[in-house]
Image 1 (cartoon, rainbow, N blue to C red):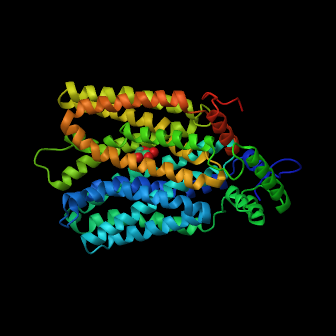
Image 2 (spheres, helix red, strand yellow):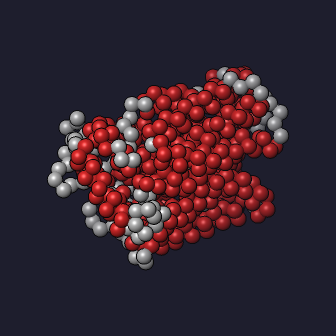
Image 3 (cartoon, protein in one colour):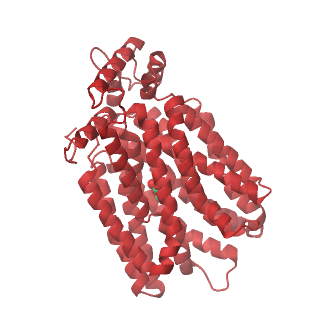
Length: 490
Ligand code: BGC
Protein backbone atom coordinates (compact mmCIF):
# COMPACT_ATOMS: atom_id res chain seq x y z
CA UNK A 1 0.00 0.00 0.00
CA UNK A 2 1.35 3.45 -0.85
CA UNK A 3 1.50 6.38 1.53
CA UNK A 4 -1.27 7.98 -0.47
CA UNK A 5 -3.67 5.27 0.62
CA UNK A 6 -7.15 6.18 1.63
CA UNK A 7 -9.37 3.89 3.64
CA UNK A 8 -13.08 4.20 3.03
CA UNK A 9 -15.11 3.90 6.17
CA UNK A 10 -18.61 4.14 7.58
CA UNK A 11 -21.06 5.53 5.11
CA UNK A 12 -18.50 6.52 2.57
CA UNK A 13 -18.56 4.74 -0.79
CA UNK A 14 -15.35 2.92 -1.63
CA UNK A 15 -15.45 4.83 -4.91
CA UNK A 16 -15.31 8.09 -2.93
CA UNK A 17 -12.08 6.71 -1.49
CA UNK A 18 -10.77 6.25 -5.02
CA UNK A 19 -12.03 9.65 -6.17
CA UNK A 20 -10.43 11.43 -3.23
CA UNK A 21 -7.12 9.61 -3.21
CA UNK A 22 -3.97 11.62 -3.70
CA UNK A 23 -2.05 11.02 -6.89
CA UNK A 24 0.74 8.51 -6.61
CA UNK A 25 3.33 7.49 -9.17
CA UNK A 26 1.31 4.29 -9.64
CA UNK A 27 -1.60 6.27 -11.13
CA UNK A 28 0.69 7.94 -13.66
CA UNK A 29 2.25 4.60 -14.47
CA UNK A 30 -1.12 2.91 -15.04
CA UNK A 31 -2.35 5.78 -17.20
CA UNK A 32 0.79 5.58 -19.36
CA UNK A 33 0.35 1.82 -19.61
CA UNK A 34 -3.28 2.24 -20.67
CA UNK A 35 -2.14 4.78 -23.27
CA UNK A 36 0.66 2.81 -24.96
CA UNK A 37 -2.03 2.01 -27.51
CA UNK A 38 -2.33 5.78 -28.07
CA UNK A 39 1.34 5.79 -29.07
CA UNK A 40 0.66 2.93 -31.51
CA UNK A 41 -2.45 4.77 -32.78
CA UNK A 42 -0.39 7.88 -33.59
CA UNK A 43 2.59 5.92 -34.88
CA UNK A 44 0.53 3.78 -37.12
CA UNK A 45 -1.78 6.36 -38.66
CA UNK A 46 1.20 8.56 -39.54
CA UNK A 47 3.81 5.98 -40.52
CA UNK A 48 2.20 4.60 -43.63
CA UNK A 49 2.58 7.88 -45.53
CA UNK A 50 6.36 7.74 -45.07
CA UNK A 51 6.80 4.27 -46.55
CA UNK A 52 4.10 4.13 -49.21
CA UNK A 53 6.42 5.14 -52.06
CA UNK A 54 8.88 2.37 -51.21
CA UNK A 55 6.63 -0.66 -50.86
CA UNK A 56 7.76 -2.87 -53.74
CA UNK A 57 4.38 -4.45 -54.57
CA UNK A 58 2.16 -3.54 -57.50
CA UNK A 59 -0.97 -2.26 -55.79
CA UNK A 60 -4.05 -0.92 -57.53
CA UNK A 61 -5.17 2.58 -56.47
CA UNK A 62 -7.91 0.91 -54.41
CA UNK A 63 -5.46 -1.18 -52.37
CA UNK A 64 -3.01 1.71 -52.07
CA UNK A 65 -5.89 3.77 -50.65
CA UNK A 66 -6.78 0.88 -48.39
CA UNK A 67 -3.25 0.79 -46.95
CA UNK A 68 -3.61 4.45 -45.95
CA UNK A 69 -7.26 5.09 -45.13
CA UNK A 70 -8.35 1.47 -44.67
CA UNK A 71 -6.60 1.45 -41.32
CA UNK A 72 -9.14 4.03 -40.10
CA UNK A 73 -12.06 1.93 -41.28
CA UNK A 74 -10.49 -1.15 -39.71
CA UNK A 75 -10.09 0.84 -36.51
CA UNK A 76 -13.81 1.68 -36.62
CA UNK A 77 -14.61 -2.04 -36.83
CA UNK A 78 -12.09 -2.82 -34.06
CA UNK A 79 -13.68 -0.19 -31.83
CA UNK A 80 -17.19 -1.57 -32.40
CA UNK A 81 -16.04 -5.09 -31.63
CA UNK A 82 -14.24 -3.99 -28.48
CA UNK A 83 -17.35 -2.51 -26.82
CA UNK A 84 -19.38 -5.63 -25.98
CA UNK A 85 -16.19 -7.63 -25.40
CA UNK A 86 -14.85 -5.23 -22.80
CA UNK A 87 -18.17 -4.96 -20.97
CA UNK A 88 -18.20 -8.76 -20.84
CA UNK A 89 -14.51 -9.62 -20.23
CA UNK A 90 -13.14 -6.48 -18.60
CA UNK A 91 -10.90 -3.58 -19.54
CA UNK A 92 -7.58 -5.22 -18.76
CA UNK A 93 -8.24 -8.35 -20.86
CA UNK A 94 -9.16 -6.24 -23.86
CA UNK A 95 -6.17 -3.94 -23.46
CA UNK A 96 -3.89 -6.99 -23.38
CA UNK A 97 -5.62 -8.67 -26.31
CA UNK A 98 -5.42 -5.66 -28.58
CA UNK A 99 -1.73 -5.05 -27.82
CA UNK A 100 -1.08 -8.71 -28.78
CA UNK A 101 -2.98 -8.31 -32.05
CA UNK A 102 -1.02 -5.15 -32.80
CA UNK A 103 2.30 -6.91 -32.12
CA UNK A 104 1.36 -9.76 -34.47
CA UNK A 105 0.23 -7.30 -37.18
CA UNK A 106 3.44 -5.26 -36.90
CA UNK A 107 5.67 -8.37 -37.08
CA UNK A 108 3.72 -9.74 -40.04
CA UNK A 109 4.07 -6.44 -41.88
CA UNK A 110 7.83 -6.41 -41.27
CA UNK A 111 8.26 -9.95 -42.58
CA UNK A 112 5.62 -9.75 -45.26
CA UNK A 113 6.21 -11.72 -48.48
CA UNK A 114 3.31 -10.49 -50.60
CA UNK A 115 0.91 -7.62 -51.10
CA UNK A 116 -1.92 -9.76 -49.69
CA UNK A 117 0.05 -10.42 -46.51
CA UNK A 118 0.83 -6.73 -46.11
CA UNK A 119 -2.84 -5.82 -46.53
CA UNK A 120 -3.86 -8.50 -44.02
CA UNK A 121 -1.32 -7.34 -41.46
CA UNK A 122 -2.36 -3.69 -41.87
CA UNK A 123 -5.94 -4.78 -41.30
CA UNK A 124 -4.94 -6.49 -38.05
CA UNK A 125 -3.13 -3.36 -36.93
CA UNK A 126 -6.17 -1.20 -37.72
CA UNK A 127 -8.46 -3.50 -35.71
CA UNK A 128 -6.08 -3.43 -32.74
CA UNK A 129 -5.65 0.35 -32.78
CA UNK A 130 -9.41 0.88 -32.95
CA UNK A 131 -10.16 -1.56 -30.14
CA UNK A 132 -7.52 0.01 -27.95
CA UNK A 133 -8.75 3.55 -28.61
CA UNK A 134 -12.24 2.46 -27.57
CA UNK A 135 -11.27 1.52 -24.03
CA UNK A 136 -8.04 3.23 -22.97
CA UNK A 137 -9.64 6.35 -21.47
CA UNK A 138 -12.60 4.35 -20.12
CA UNK A 139 -10.13 2.26 -18.10
CA UNK A 140 -8.49 5.44 -16.81
CA UNK A 141 -11.83 7.08 -15.94
CA UNK A 142 -12.68 4.03 -13.87
CA UNK A 143 -9.77 4.42 -11.45
CA UNK A 144 -8.67 8.08 -11.69
CA UNK A 145 -9.23 10.46 -8.76
CA UNK A 146 -11.95 12.82 -9.99
CA UNK A 147 -9.87 15.99 -9.82
CA UNK A 148 -7.09 14.46 -11.94
CA UNK A 149 -9.14 12.39 -14.39
CA UNK A 150 -8.64 14.98 -17.13
CA UNK A 151 -4.87 14.99 -16.82
CA UNK A 152 -4.61 11.24 -16.63
CA UNK A 153 -6.84 10.81 -19.69
CA UNK A 154 -5.03 13.44 -21.73
CA UNK A 155 -1.99 11.21 -21.55
CA UNK A 156 -3.79 9.27 -24.29
CA UNK A 157 -3.70 12.31 -26.58
CA UNK A 158 -0.12 12.93 -25.61
CA UNK A 159 0.87 9.42 -26.53
CA UNK A 160 -0.95 9.78 -29.87
CA UNK A 161 1.01 12.94 -30.64
CA UNK A 162 4.30 11.36 -29.52
CA UNK A 163 3.51 8.34 -31.72
CA UNK A 164 2.97 10.61 -34.73
CA UNK A 165 6.20 12.51 -34.07
CA UNK A 166 8.26 9.36 -33.45
CA UNK A 167 6.97 7.85 -36.71
CA UNK A 168 8.34 10.84 -38.65
CA UNK A 169 11.62 10.93 -36.75
CA UNK A 170 12.21 7.22 -37.05
CA UNK A 171 11.44 7.21 -40.76
CA UNK A 172 13.80 10.18 -41.18
CA UNK A 173 16.55 8.37 -39.29
CA UNK A 174 16.16 5.16 -41.26
CA UNK A 175 16.09 6.92 -44.65
CA UNK A 176 19.07 9.10 -43.78
CA UNK A 177 21.13 6.18 -42.43
CA UNK A 178 20.28 3.73 -45.21
CA UNK A 179 19.01 5.66 -48.26
CA UNK A 180 20.00 2.78 -50.58
CA UNK A 181 17.74 0.28 -48.79
CA UNK A 182 14.51 2.29 -48.92
CA UNK A 183 12.78 -0.36 -51.03
CA UNK A 184 14.28 -3.35 -49.21
CA UNK A 185 14.80 -3.21 -45.49
CA UNK A 186 13.89 0.37 -44.53
CA UNK A 187 10.12 0.22 -44.94
CA UNK A 188 10.01 -3.14 -43.15
CA UNK A 189 11.93 -1.77 -40.17
CA UNK A 190 9.72 1.33 -40.05
CA UNK A 191 6.47 -0.68 -40.11
CA UNK A 192 7.71 -3.48 -37.86
CA UNK A 193 9.23 -1.45 -35.07
CA UNK A 194 5.78 -0.79 -33.60
CA UNK A 195 5.89 -4.40 -32.42
CA UNK A 196 8.35 -3.43 -29.68
CA UNK A 197 6.06 -1.08 -27.69
CA UNK A 198 3.18 -3.47 -28.35
CA UNK A 199 5.05 -6.41 -26.82
CA UNK A 200 6.12 -4.24 -23.88
CA UNK A 201 2.45 -3.28 -23.45
CA UNK A 202 1.33 -6.92 -23.36
CA UNK A 203 3.92 -7.79 -20.72
CA UNK A 204 3.31 -4.78 -18.48
CA UNK A 205 -0.47 -4.72 -18.87
CA UNK A 206 -0.56 -8.30 -17.59
CA UNK A 207 0.33 -6.93 -14.15
CA UNK A 208 -2.03 -3.98 -14.01
CA UNK A 209 -5.14 -4.11 -11.80
CA UNK A 210 -8.51 -4.69 -13.45
CA UNK A 211 -10.83 -1.68 -13.32
CA UNK A 212 -12.43 -1.52 -9.83
CA UNK A 213 -15.65 0.01 -11.19
CA UNK A 214 -16.03 -2.77 -13.74
CA UNK A 215 -15.31 -5.41 -11.08
CA UNK A 216 -17.98 -4.00 -8.75
CA UNK A 217 -20.42 -3.98 -11.60
CA UNK A 218 -19.66 -7.67 -12.20
CA UNK A 219 -20.39 -8.44 -8.55
CA UNK A 220 -16.75 -9.52 -7.98
CA UNK A 221 -16.38 -7.86 -4.58
CA UNK A 222 -13.28 -9.71 -3.35
CA UNK A 223 -11.49 -8.88 -6.62
CA UNK A 224 -12.63 -5.26 -6.32
CA UNK A 225 -11.18 -5.00 -2.84
CA UNK A 226 -7.90 -6.51 -4.12
CA UNK A 227 -7.81 -4.12 -7.12
CA UNK A 228 -8.53 -1.13 -4.88
CA UNK A 229 -5.77 -2.32 -2.55
CA UNK A 230 -3.32 -2.21 -5.49
CA UNK A 231 -4.54 1.34 -6.14
CA UNK A 232 -3.79 2.35 -2.56
CA UNK A 233 -7.39 2.30 -1.27
CA UNK A 234 -7.74 -0.25 1.54
CA UNK A 235 -11.27 -1.53 1.90
CA UNK A 236 -12.85 -4.80 2.92
CA UNK A 237 -15.06 -6.97 0.73
CA UNK A 238 -18.03 -5.95 2.92
CA UNK A 239 -17.42 -2.28 2.30
CA UNK A 240 -17.33 -2.97 -1.42
CA UNK A 241 -20.60 -4.88 -1.12
CA UNK A 242 -22.24 -1.93 0.68
CA UNK A 243 -21.08 0.42 -2.08
CA UNK A 244 -22.46 -1.97 -4.71
CA UNK A 245 -25.84 -1.94 -2.94
CA UNK A 246 -25.82 1.83 -2.86
CA UNK A 247 -24.99 2.01 -6.59
CA UNK A 248 -27.85 -0.38 -7.33
CA UNK A 249 -30.25 1.77 -5.30
CA UNK A 250 -29.07 4.91 -7.13
CA UNK A 251 -29.55 3.12 -10.45
CA UNK A 252 -33.13 2.26 -9.45
CA UNK A 253 -33.75 5.98 -8.97
CA UNK A 254 -32.48 6.86 -12.45
CA UNK A 255 -35.07 7.34 -15.19
CA UNK A 256 -36.39 3.93 -16.24
CA UNK A 257 -34.80 2.08 -13.28
CA UNK A 258 -31.77 -0.18 -13.22
CA UNK A 259 -32.79 -2.40 -16.12
CA UNK A 260 -32.81 0.66 -18.33
CA UNK A 261 -29.15 1.53 -18.61
CA UNK A 262 -29.60 3.34 -21.92
CA UNK A 263 -31.46 6.21 -20.24
CA UNK A 264 -32.20 9.49 -22.05
CA UNK A 265 -29.13 10.94 -20.32
CA UNK A 266 -26.88 8.14 -21.61
CA UNK A 267 -28.27 8.53 -25.11
CA UNK A 268 -27.73 12.26 -24.90
CA UNK A 269 -24.11 11.72 -23.81
CA UNK A 270 -23.67 9.29 -26.71
CA UNK A 271 -24.92 11.85 -29.21
CA UNK A 272 -22.92 14.73 -27.72
CA UNK A 273 -19.62 12.81 -27.67
CA UNK A 274 -20.26 11.42 -31.16
CA UNK A 275 -20.98 14.87 -32.59
CA UNK A 276 -17.92 16.22 -30.75
CA UNK A 277 -15.86 13.50 -32.41
CA UNK A 278 -17.31 14.20 -35.85
CA UNK A 279 -16.30 17.84 -35.44
CA UNK A 280 -12.92 16.79 -34.02
CA UNK A 281 -12.26 15.12 -37.37
CA UNK A 282 -14.12 17.10 -40.03
CA UNK A 283 -12.57 20.38 -38.91
CA UNK A 284 -9.47 19.00 -40.63
CA UNK A 285 -6.80 18.12 -38.07
CA UNK A 286 -5.44 15.33 -40.23
CA UNK A 287 -5.27 17.52 -43.34
CA UNK A 288 -1.96 19.14 -42.34
CA UNK A 289 -0.68 15.79 -41.05
CA UNK A 290 -1.52 13.87 -44.20
CA UNK A 291 -1.26 16.54 -46.88
CA UNK A 292 0.90 19.20 -45.21
CA UNK A 293 4.19 17.56 -46.17
CA UNK A 294 3.21 17.68 -49.86
CA UNK A 295 2.22 21.32 -49.56
CA UNK A 296 5.24 22.41 -47.56
CA UNK A 297 7.87 20.01 -48.87
CA UNK A 298 9.03 22.65 -51.38
CA UNK A 299 10.51 24.73 -48.58
CA UNK A 300 13.00 22.02 -47.72
CA UNK A 301 13.54 20.34 -51.06
CA UNK A 302 15.89 21.17 -53.95
CA UNK A 303 15.03 20.69 -57.62
CA UNK A 304 16.20 17.35 -59.01
CA UNK A 305 16.08 15.54 -55.62
CA UNK A 306 15.51 11.77 -55.56
CA UNK A 307 12.40 10.10 -54.11
CA UNK A 308 14.26 9.48 -50.85
CA UNK A 309 15.31 13.15 -50.69
CA UNK A 310 11.72 14.19 -51.36
CA UNK A 311 10.51 11.86 -48.60
CA UNK A 312 13.09 13.30 -46.21
CA UNK A 313 12.02 16.87 -47.11
CA UNK A 314 8.35 16.07 -46.51
CA UNK A 315 9.20 14.34 -43.24
CA UNK A 316 11.11 17.37 -41.92
CA UNK A 317 8.06 19.64 -42.31
CA UNK A 318 5.77 16.95 -40.91
CA UNK A 319 8.10 16.52 -37.93
CA UNK A 320 7.93 20.27 -37.19
CA UNK A 321 4.11 20.10 -37.13
CA UNK A 322 4.33 16.91 -35.07
CA UNK A 323 6.55 18.63 -32.53
CA UNK A 324 4.12 21.56 -32.21
CA UNK A 325 1.39 18.98 -31.59
CA UNK A 326 3.32 17.28 -28.76
CA UNK A 327 4.26 20.56 -27.07
CA UNK A 328 0.76 22.08 -27.27
CA UNK A 329 -0.83 18.95 -25.84
CA UNK A 330 1.02 19.88 -22.65
CA UNK A 331 -1.23 22.96 -22.35
CA UNK A 332 -4.28 20.73 -22.51
CA UNK A 333 -2.74 18.46 -19.89
CA UNK A 334 -1.95 21.44 -17.66
CA UNK A 335 -5.35 23.12 -17.78
CA UNK A 336 -7.98 20.44 -18.42
CA UNK A 337 -8.82 19.88 -14.74
CA UNK A 338 -8.57 23.59 -13.84
CA UNK A 339 -10.08 25.51 -16.77
CA UNK A 340 -12.31 22.55 -17.64
CA UNK A 341 -13.37 20.73 -20.78
CA UNK A 342 -15.77 23.40 -22.09
CA UNK A 343 -13.38 26.34 -21.82
CA UNK A 344 -10.53 24.48 -23.50
CA UNK A 345 -12.74 23.12 -26.28
CA UNK A 346 -14.19 26.59 -26.98
CA UNK A 347 -10.72 28.12 -27.08
CA UNK A 348 -9.47 25.26 -29.22
CA UNK A 349 -12.17 25.52 -31.89
CA UNK A 350 -11.88 29.34 -31.94
CA UNK A 351 -8.12 29.06 -32.54
CA UNK A 352 -8.62 26.41 -35.19
CA UNK A 353 -11.12 28.60 -37.10
CA UNK A 354 -8.91 31.69 -37.05
CA UNK A 355 -5.64 30.00 -37.93
CA UNK A 356 -7.07 27.79 -40.64
CA UNK A 357 -8.18 31.09 -42.25
CA UNK A 358 -4.66 32.49 -41.83
CA UNK A 359 -3.22 29.41 -43.57
CA UNK A 360 -5.89 29.71 -46.29
CA UNK A 361 -4.96 33.35 -46.88
CA UNK A 362 -1.33 32.28 -47.25
CA UNK A 363 -2.26 29.64 -49.80
CA UNK A 364 -4.55 31.98 -51.76
CA UNK A 365 -2.64 35.24 -51.82
CA UNK A 366 1.06 34.68 -51.19
CA UNK A 367 3.90 33.06 -53.10
CA UNK A 368 7.41 31.76 -52.39
CA UNK A 369 8.84 31.85 -48.90
CA UNK A 370 6.19 34.22 -47.40
CA UNK A 371 3.56 31.70 -48.49
CA UNK A 372 5.38 28.80 -46.86
CA UNK A 373 5.98 30.79 -43.66
CA UNK A 374 2.37 31.98 -43.31
CA UNK A 375 0.96 28.54 -44.13
CA UNK A 376 3.37 26.88 -41.70
CA UNK A 377 2.53 29.37 -38.91
CA UNK A 378 -1.21 29.06 -39.63
CA UNK A 379 -1.09 25.26 -39.58
CA UNK A 380 1.11 25.22 -36.47
CA UNK A 381 -1.28 27.38 -34.40
CA UNK A 382 -4.26 25.50 -35.85
CA UNK A 383 -2.65 22.25 -34.65
CA UNK A 384 -1.71 23.79 -31.29
CA UNK A 385 -5.34 24.90 -30.76
CA UNK A 386 -6.57 21.41 -31.57
CA UNK A 387 -3.96 19.81 -29.32
CA UNK A 388 -4.75 22.06 -26.40
CA UNK A 389 -8.54 21.97 -26.47
CA UNK A 390 -10.01 19.47 -28.87
CA UNK A 391 -7.95 16.31 -29.37
CA UNK A 392 -7.50 15.10 -25.81
CA UNK A 393 -10.81 16.59 -24.68
CA UNK A 394 -12.66 14.33 -27.09
CA UNK A 395 -10.94 11.16 -25.89
CA UNK A 396 -11.36 12.22 -22.26
CA UNK A 397 -15.12 12.82 -22.66
CA UNK A 398 -15.47 9.50 -24.44
CA UNK A 399 -14.10 7.71 -21.36
CA UNK A 400 -15.82 9.71 -18.63
CA UNK A 401 -19.46 10.37 -19.52
CA UNK A 402 -21.04 6.89 -19.49
CA UNK A 403 -22.21 4.63 -16.64
CA UNK A 404 -20.09 1.55 -15.95
CA UNK A 405 -22.76 -0.88 -17.14
CA UNK A 406 -22.49 0.38 -20.72
CA UNK A 407 -19.26 2.36 -20.65
CA UNK A 408 -17.42 -0.11 -22.88
CA UNK A 409 -20.13 -0.25 -25.55
CA UNK A 410 -20.98 3.44 -25.49
CA UNK A 411 -17.36 4.61 -25.50
CA UNK A 412 -16.61 2.12 -28.28
CA UNK A 413 -19.48 3.42 -30.43
CA UNK A 414 -18.13 6.94 -30.06
CA UNK A 415 -14.60 5.78 -30.98
CA UNK A 416 -16.04 4.09 -34.07
CA UNK A 417 -17.73 7.36 -35.06
CA UNK A 418 -14.36 9.10 -34.68
CA UNK A 419 -12.63 6.60 -36.97
CA UNK A 420 -15.37 6.71 -39.59
CA UNK A 421 -15.29 10.52 -39.63
CA UNK A 422 -11.49 10.32 -39.86
CA UNK A 423 -11.82 8.03 -42.89
CA UNK A 424 -14.48 10.22 -44.51
CA UNK A 425 -12.55 13.49 -44.36
CA UNK A 426 -9.30 11.94 -45.53
CA UNK A 427 -11.10 10.28 -48.45
CA UNK A 428 -13.09 13.39 -49.33
CA UNK A 429 -10.28 15.93 -49.07
CA UNK A 430 -8.57 15.31 -52.45
CA UNK A 431 -11.90 15.40 -54.33
CA UNK A 432 -12.99 18.56 -52.50
CA UNK A 433 -9.63 20.13 -53.27
CA UNK A 434 -9.93 19.22 -56.96
CA UNK A 435 -13.50 20.55 -57.14
CA UNK A 436 -13.21 23.81 -55.19
CA UNK A 437 -9.48 24.55 -54.80
CA UNK A 438 -7.43 24.37 -51.62
CA UNK A 439 -8.21 27.84 -50.20
CA UNK A 440 -11.99 27.31 -50.46
CA UNK A 441 -11.73 23.93 -48.76
CA UNK A 442 -9.70 25.51 -45.97
CA UNK A 443 -12.37 28.20 -45.52
CA UNK A 444 -14.96 25.42 -45.33
CA UNK A 445 -12.91 23.73 -42.58
CA UNK A 446 -12.78 27.03 -40.68
CA UNK A 447 -16.57 27.37 -40.97
CA UNK A 448 -16.90 23.85 -39.54
CA UNK A 449 -14.75 24.93 -36.56
CA UNK A 450 -17.14 27.83 -35.98
CA UNK A 451 -20.07 25.37 -36.01
CA UNK A 452 -18.17 23.14 -33.60
CA UNK A 453 -17.68 26.13 -31.29
CA UNK A 454 -21.42 26.81 -31.33
CA UNK A 455 -22.14 23.14 -30.66
CA UNK A 456 -19.83 23.00 -27.64
CA UNK A 457 -21.21 26.27 -26.31
CA UNK A 458 -24.79 25.07 -26.56
CA UNK A 459 -24.55 21.40 -25.62
CA UNK A 460 -21.38 20.37 -23.76
CA UNK A 461 -21.77 20.48 -19.97
CA UNK A 462 -18.70 20.97 -17.80
CA UNK A 463 -17.58 17.72 -16.23
CA UNK A 464 -14.39 18.72 -14.44
CA UNK A 465 -14.18 17.86 -10.76
CA UNK A 466 -17.20 15.54 -10.83
CA UNK A 467 -17.07 11.81 -10.10
CA UNK A 468 -18.00 9.66 -13.10
CA UNK A 469 -21.28 8.83 -11.34
CA UNK A 470 -22.01 12.58 -10.98
CA UNK A 471 -21.19 13.08 -14.66
CA UNK A 472 -23.79 10.46 -15.58
CA UNK A 473 -26.36 12.21 -13.35
CA UNK A 474 -25.51 15.54 -15.00
CA UNK A 475 -26.35 14.18 -18.45
CA UNK A 476 -29.59 12.73 -17.06
CA UNK A 477 -30.48 16.22 -15.80
CA UNK A 478 -29.57 17.77 -19.12
CA UNK A 479 -31.79 15.31 -20.90
CA UNK A 480 -34.60 16.68 -18.76
CA UNK A 481 -33.86 20.19 -20.05
CA UNK A 482 -31.16 21.62 -17.76
CA UNK A 483 -28.79 23.86 -19.75
CA UNK A 484 -25.09 23.13 -20.36
CA UNK A 485 -23.35 25.13 -17.66
CA UNK A 486 -20.05 25.35 -15.85
CA UNK A 487 -19.54 22.88 -12.99
CA UNK A 488 -20.08 24.01 -9.44
CA UNK A 489 -16.75 24.90 -7.84
CA UNK A 490 -14.76 21.99 -6.45
C1 BGC B 1 -7.30 12.39 -33.33
C2 BGC B 1 -6.48 11.92 -34.51
C3 BGC B 1 -5.40 12.93 -34.80
C4 BGC B 1 -4.59 13.22 -33.57
C5 BGC B 1 -3.62 14.35 -33.83
C6 BGC B 1 -6.41 12.63 -32.15
O1 BGC B 1 -7.17 13.09 -31.08
O2 BGC B 1 -8.29 11.44 -32.99
O3 BGC B 1 -7.28 11.74 -35.63
O4 BGC B 1 -4.53 12.45 -35.80
O5 BGC B 1 -5.42 13.59 -32.49
O6 BGC B 1 -2.88 14.66 -32.71
